[in-house]
Structures are given as structure tokens and as C-alpha cells.
Length: 157
Image 1 (cartoon, one colour):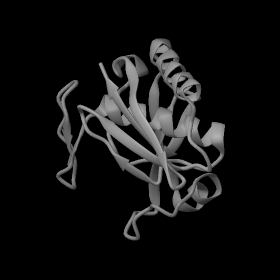
Image 2: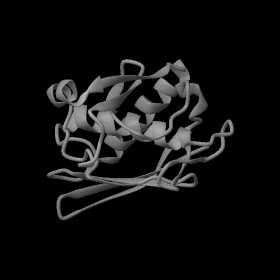
Image 3: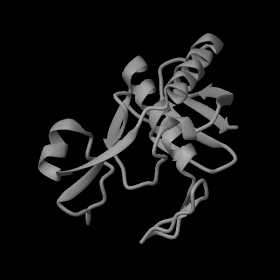
């Protein structure tokens, strides 16, 4: 069961608090990282209200210019105020469209796909804003690359 107050964290069935604007921003960053660099979505994520971090497998560090380009890309989508929607499909259909490796073994046959406009779609059980304009300003605050892992830390304001 989920309980939500507009703009407030959500308590989900796993007693985990989520902050919908940050979680939706994570979708945008993940989708664009996968498209630009072809190494998939983050393999590790820590999403919180104040700041969040995502880790990606990359062969070399992202440049400052690449990081600023990602930031600009996401803020443009925020300004577009696109709708965030969901659809429910079978696992069989999902297997043709998505990486199913992170789906829990006890997941139902029906799974949820979250769409952030035409910019991202992925399997997700989390909470999201209704439109990207609710995210706020996206800022990459730091990054580091070590041993093939690119970490990106970001905040919303």
C-alpha cells in the first residue's frame, strides 16, 4: 500500500521512503546514459530527497562537458513539463522490450512500465511525479570515475 501527500515522500509496501521528483529525475538520467553511452542503466543507485547517486560501468571518465550536457538535457525535459504515465503488460511482453534481470523472482505476471514522455521507459514499481515540471532544477554536483565505474551525484532544487 502506498500513501502520498503531494510533493512529500511516499511510503511503499517495503517501508521505503521515495521522493517522486528525485526518482523521476533518476529515470531521465538513466535513460539518457543508456542511449548516449550504450552501457545500460545504472547498476547501483542510492536515491534520496537531498541528493542521489548512480553508478555506471563506463570505459573512461565522463568529461565536464559531457556532464553539463546531461544536466542541460534533463533540465530541458523538466521545462517541457512532459507527462509521466504508466502501462501494465505481461512479463512475456516485457521480456521483448526490457532487461528483466532485476525483476524479483516473486513478481506477478503483470508488470508496470513507467514512461517519461517519449524520453524514457522502464520497468518500475516506484513513485513518480505526474509531469516533469514537478522535478525542479536538476544539478550534477559531483562525479568520479574509478576502475571502470562512473559515479554521478545529483540534487534537485
